[in-house]
Every structure is written in structure tokens, then in C-alpha cells.
Length: 513
Image (cartoon, rainbow, N blue to C red; front, side, top):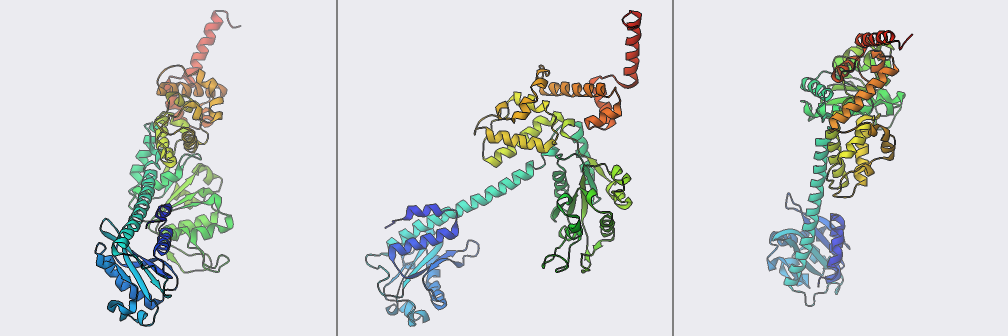
């Protein structure tokens, strides 16, 4: 009796196609030239059409739903099954308008159930005598068939729920590890965390300064998510991707038909109302639009392109740039008004080379994220892998590290361990000489030796000019001085004094003329 049921399993996970396949299977088993599959809504209990075939007039649909509702309300009751070869001779059916108009001559109605609960109802009818195969059909047979169909639908619902939960879990996981840039124990990242803690509860503008790849957008999202504006929109605008002629429309909006699409554009300031607006590469904004942006933020209103209707502005502004604000202002690329607003609370995001001691924690976080993405269980990272990671200078910062770990996870077998063989060839081949100099010790000690060597080499190249050396290494002068003190590297006056002493001693010993 259950011929073809096994093929229906292929449609689990696609409710619409499953409903169509089940109804088609029922027609193949019992016949009929028209029919309906009505599914029980999980929230309301109402019946809704999930599939149909043949001609089912509106009146017929309404009449058969009356019997279908009874079947749905009593899914385990044999009386919920209707086997009616001649509907005109059955009193319950004969009074129905659709029967009087001969929209159907016979009917089969039975519930689909799973574990005692109704999932749906199938109605099969015939407009031409003989379409339905009533011979040897019993209520028990239809109830058993309906139970099999019901289990299929229950399986589909379970799969859909699991898929939904899995998507939600992935989103939560991405949110949890989306702030990987904040992971770490280095002084630099602790400084950033302290700065964020102070500014997040407020609504003052924040400027995120940092090299490409340092996670500026993720930090901006974190500011929004932890702030009182968290339930309102977060809107990011990448000005590098917007033609200059479109910047005004992207930020302020454009009225429909005013030199743009017929449907117009709302604009980022309006989209982010009550929330946070992130503007990437703010230095690309023309001076006239900078002035207009400041006026909108200060005045609390803006007007879209095309002389549209004024609308309220209520956003927290976060900007991101890799260029020093003072330099932008000095070069007249940043207006006085916008410079004062952006310079109110700048946060410098450190490049990865300034926080190498965070490598293990960052690597673990990216490993977890990549493992979840690829659906793998990775058993960790071999200690020797950190040697290679620590020796690299990471010109693209955290973005490059994340891509490297993602690449490594992809190459690592499930339940395997990331090894140097999983790393990119360029990372291995270009760092072998550096690794030879690492020696023994903990990861932190090895990283310290690399950093100390890099600083000494840069100092020698620049004749111990601290300002030039700091710029070459991508550090502030104070950060370089702190590292010189930490590693006991002599430079400046102390270094010059020592060099004079060595020269005088060499002359006394006759080693110098």
C-alpha cells in the first residue's frame, strides 16, 4: 500500500515540494481527478492549502474544508476518515451546494497525523465516476497512510527547525567571535578596551584610526551593539565604493525621479535613525558634503537631494580612516568643523605587529570561527605553527591572519591538527631564515626576540633616529621608547655616549687612528 513512500524522503527539507509529492503519491494510491492537501498551521491550528491538483472550485473547497476540519480535530478517530463513493447519497454531504452542483461525485478525506497530533488533511475527489479506487479501501488503511505522511511532514518540520536553529547558532557564534580584534592581553588592546568602555555609553562621535585590516568595522559594530542604541539600525557606508557624484544621495537620500531611480533613495542618515552610522574613508567626502553632514548632525535635520521634505536626523556617528586626522586637516581634506567633531574621541587601533603577544588567542578565536564555517572539528594548532606566525610581519593585519587561519582549516582534515603544512607557502618560505634565529623558549620569549631584532635593525638603518625608526616600524615615538626600555636597547644620548666611550677606548688601545 505504501508504494513510493521511500521516494518522498528526498523532499524532506522543502515543505512545498514535499506537500506536492505527498498529494501526488496519495493520488497514485487511491486515484481521483482533483484533490487538496491542507496543512495545519502550527501557531493558529487553521488549515491552509499546501498543494492541489485538478479543478477545485471555491465552493467545493469551502465545503470539503468542513469535513477536513473535523478530521484535523480528531486525527486518531476512525470517524475522521470519510470514504464516500456517492456523496449525493450521504446525508452529511448531500446538503452541500458543491455536491448539489455535482462538483464532485465521490470523496476520500483522511487526516495526516504524527504522534497523535494532526499535521494536515488530504481530500481526493472525482468528477468522473471511476476516478477514485474505492475497492478494498478501509478507514484503517487511510489512517495508517496518513500516519506515514504525517511522520514525513513532522520530519520536514524538524529539519526546518534545526536548519533555523543552526543558522541562529552560526549568527550567534559569528557575533561572539566577530569581535576577535578585541581578543588579547597586550597593552595595546587593553588600551583600546579601556577607551571603548568609556565612550560606548555616550553618543559622542568616535573616530577609529588604523591601518587596513585592523578591524575598524568590527569595532564600530561592537560600539553599536553594546550601546543604548543597540536595538536601532547599524548602517555602514564605504565611501571608496561610492562615486563622488552619488555620495550626497547615499548619505542624505534622493527624492524619487530626481536624477535617479524612480523609487528614490532613503539615504544612510535616514536608514540609521536612532542607531549608528559608520562612514568608512571619511576623508573621501568632498568639503561641501562635510559641511552639510556637520549641519545635519548638529541641527538634527537633513534634506534629501531633489528638494525633498526635511526629515529628522538622530544618529551616533562613527568614522573610520587609515590617515591621521591632523594631517587630513592640514592638507585641507578635512574641514575645520568636521575635524573638531571627529577629533573629539579618536581611538588608534594597533596593527598586528604591535600586539604579537596576542597571536595565540587571536589564532584560537579565528580557528573556532573557521571550524564552525567549514563544519569541522579541529584539534588545535601545533606549537611549531606559532613559530611561523610570529615570524611574519602581517602587512594586512588581522584580516590577513583570519584568511591565513581560514586557509589552514580548509587544508586540515576533520579532527586533525593545524600543522606548518597547512600554512601558505609564502609564509613558510620567506620566514625560514627568521625562524633559524628564534632559538628556544616560550612563544612570548620568541616573539620578544623577533621584535627586539627588528627594532635594532631599524635603528641601525636610521642611525638611531628614533622618530624615523618609529615611523618605519609603524609605531608612535612613545611606543618605540617604551619598547626600547622594555628590551634594554640603548639609543639616543645614552647610545651616543656609549659609542664615544668605545671609540675613545679603541683609540687608547691603538685600534683606531
